[in-house]
Image (cartoon, helix red, strand yellow):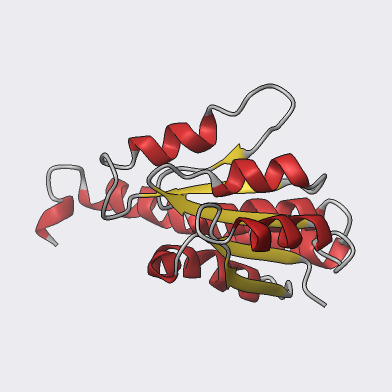
Length: 170
């Protein structure tokens, strides 16, 4: 059964949103992925949000570009945590419209917001939410962060060995 819902306003958002799916797959967290438009399918959006918890979802990742109402509208309907992914879309003002639409929610309707096009971080945040109550997921997250640390330490050693002046010559 899916624990995380990944929704987006249009299928054109999939190239950005697929990173969230890949992260959840890596952590072995079941998810569902679909299109739910706040503006073009408002009744579908309401149904999705009102039934999400009873379907077993524990968090929702909502990506949207332009006016980006989807994450906030979903958060206004469900008690589940909602993670908003602002997307730089074809009609976007360099993504700022999306960022501000998701970030500037009124008090009482919080949406956790990641950076522009950062659905990978949204997937990691959803895994952290699940991992707070699931030891297996928590352990996978710990291993993931250790891997990140190891990668950085390899770069530290490479920089020490080569020197900053010569790093890009190699």
